[in-house]
Structures are given as C-alpha cells and as structure tokens.
View 1: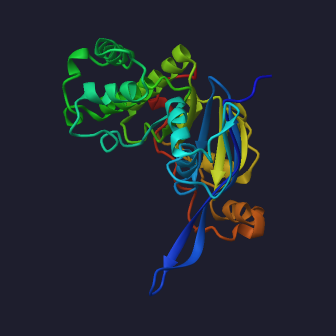
View 2: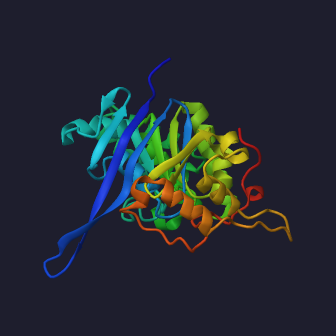
View 3: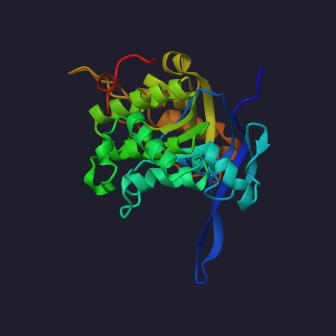
Length: 315
C-alpha cells in the first residue's frame, strides 16, 4: 500500500493569551491539541465541527501560515512543518488553498488575467508569455467562466464567480492537495451546489486530494469520502462518510448530527444539548482543561441548509 499524500501526526497549535499592565502572557488557548490524520491521493477528507473547534487552524497550520507548537506534517514522505523559507516554495506549489471569502482573498487591483498568471510565473510553469496566456485561458474554461472576463477585476463578479476564480488560481499551480477552508459557506444554496459539483469534477479530472473544512453537514455528506469530527481542538471521531451519518459512535458526533434541521415542513428534531457536551468535556484529558466551552448552549456551528438544497446523491 502506498504512503498517504498528507500525514498529520499529533499536531498542536497553542496561542498565548496576554493581559495585564505589560501585556504579559497569562494563559494559553489550546486551539489544536494533538490532531492526527492522513489524506490519500484523490481522496476527500472533511474536517467538521462547530465554530471555534480548531478546524480552520488545522488547515492553516498545514499550509504553514504560522508555525506549529508541536507535531509533524508530512507531505508525500517529506516533513514540511520545519522547512526553511526556501524549502517552502516547492511545497506551496503542491498544496494550495481556497478560502472562505473570495472577495478578501483576491487582490482588488489586479485583473483576473494577472491573478491567474501570477502562480504560473512564480513557479516557472510556462516558458513564454504565449504559454502563460494559453494556460490562463484554459483555466477559465476549466472553472466554466467566459474568457472575455479575463480583463475584469474581482468586484465585477458575483460571489460564486469570484470563488471560481479562487479555484482557478489554486489549480494554476498544478497542486496535488487543495485545502478548502469553508470554501462554500459564504455562498447561497444554488451557487453552493454548483461549486461543490465543480470541485468534484475537478477532483476526478486532475486526481486532486481535498481537505474540506466545513460546518455544513449536508455538503459534507454529499461530497466526502471520510469525515473527521473535531471538538475542542481534538478529533473525537473519524470514519467513512456512511458510518458517520448512519451510525455515529461518539456522543459529540451524535449531538452534532441531531442539530441538523429536517428538510420537511412541520418536521422537527430535538437537539442533544448540555448533557452530551458535559460527557464530551469529561472525556477529554484533564476534563477539558485549557479549553473553553459553554455547557448550557446547544451544539453550534451547524449549517441550517438542508441536504435537499445541495445537488443530489454523492458521486
């Protein structure tokens, strides 16, 4: 059996909390505290959980947007968590990202043509300006945008079109892994379905691996292969999609699924709230010390969008 494309081993990221007269460090927030998983080539692994559980921090740590506290991140057999700035250049071509807000992640002063050409030039993927133009035009076709939009700027597009530009920019570097950090959560239901279907088609066409970070369980059920459930900086359950959604084992996973609305008029669910959360906290080392949780609130961070509004059965 071949080695996984991405291997994350005991990843930790702790942020200092400063206060007092001289802003001295007073405590720590254990945003990610011992997370381990792997992503195979061509696989989609979804990282789910309520807001604040640490799932986006995991994605940003893998991308080396900040240094990790402890643990290892291995890409195709090579550790990337301790690479020098020079060594990171090759890694960044192989691992790309699509952020939640497409407008803030695109340079408003650049035309789409220049946005897509930038990674091609930076990584030396074209030998001439003509080849750059050919690649840029092909990227527009790939994400199903008209070529005559290349001279526009980001503010001239809708939210869904801007997200397609972000996906095209990620594809421009010819990556093996794309981290989708809440990539569809800012879009409406119909556009969300289009972007999800586009990601699935691109995965099949290019053999991409996806780390799909989301709190929308309907989308996750539609497109993922495996699901990792995070709670208070830890993965509490990881299993194939069908097992998570039909036979969850951990109390928090059951509570999370119970909070998803039923897509039927008049139907109602009864979310599992404080009792389950208390069990989850007690199950953590030291009773969840170093984390923060309101044990009286329902499970949060679950999208109210129904599965009926996405795009049909998983492919």
